[in-house]
Amino acid sequence: MQDYDIVIGLEVHSELKTNSKVFCSCKNQFGQEPNTNCCPVCVGLPGALPVLNKKAVELVIKAGLTMDCEINDIAVFERKNYFYPDLAKAYQISQLVKPICVGGHIDLENKTVRLNRIHLEEDAGKLVHSTAAIGTLIDYNRGGVPLMELVTEPDISSADEAVEFLTKLRQRLIYAGVAECKMEQGGMRCDVNISVKKRGSLELGERTEMKNLNSFKSVYRAINYEANRQIEVLKNGGKIVQETRKWDDNHNRSISMRKKETSSDYRYFPDPDMLAVEIPREDVEALRKTLPLMPEELKARYISEYGLSEYESEILTRENHLSDYFNKTISFYNNPKEVYNWILTEILSRIESSENISISPENLAKLLKLVENKEVTRTNAKEMLSRIMENGEEIEALIKEYGGGVDETALKALVENIVTSNPKAVEDYKTSDTPEKVFRWFTGQVMKETKGKANASKAEEFIRELLNK
Ligand SMILES: [Zn+2]
Image (cartoon, rainbow, N blue to C red; front, side, top):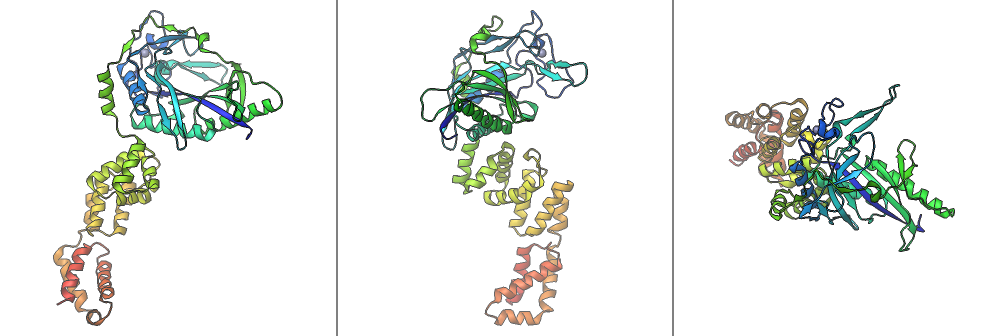
């Protein structure tokens, strides 16, 4: 492999997070009964007219802004003509000459991957290959779901870089509220264009394409397999044929499907049913203002303003739900390091997804304040957290049970009792070289008697008062 360079370009499709489809008012919703969520427009009946969903255009603009794309003043929709059973009208409304976004980039750890474009198009229906005798079924529910297609320049040179790129892209789209990228539902799919060339050579090799990879793992495996296959062919004096290959994840191999099409095969032409879309600059600027901080920006803020480490910030910004949770919690309790520690050790270990953290940021903040004010011990606070998260118990009831359970008069009486019944220790306190050690013994006694429920700073105050009499 070391005699060859691998050249990879990606085409990534992501379903946009809109309420309705891109050219009709059917719901954009996954998991419905087959063919219950479609209308004449999205199944492509003759004469049905598309009406553009403005939200879909806005989401593509937002996506582009997070990657420094240029937003075109005018975007044009074209018909991409091809026949396939999941596309009943025999063309897909897409964009070729004037997409919404051009250029842009995503920066990886060690390189910048340039983007060629991002455009808006419609998704096709779905073929369901039934094992029963009836054969292949078609579900048109997905037809007309808004899809953004992002095309990179061939700047990626390994499977690792491809996965790093996709991870960053996915994070951005989720943070910006553009797409949910649920890969297991086909919400994000990737086509991989790959070729190999002699190391250092300027001439690109013939490329092959693998379509619709729907997990990072299959992208990774498909790239490694296909690069090796091409290198072997070249080493044996063979030639690479430009073609579309199918990735077979179960058998870890790619299989030739058909000769690769070029855009001229699709006979693109401007869709006469669609007006060109004007994109005023003030709209773009207004959308820019709605964008939240991207994970890299948040990470930088966590490091510089909150003093968290690179690693800690990385963990918190991997998922938007988690960084949102962290941000909210510190808005109630401004101790980022302590909040991070609790999230890492007590919360992440109890959840499968940061989407559903079963203690609210307000309540976590409340709990941490109780610990800071020594109204509950750290151990008890952990128990309380566990009971809230696992049994759904109310924090107020737990506060009564664990902390503030001993009122001041009772606490004072208890301290007096402990001090007077331990004259030897009192003597030690007064004569010892290490009086603080004795003092801590007294505090320990109080906490033992109250099962940790006493307000520790109050208890300390009373003990010190009596011992210093
Ligand atoms: Zn429809």
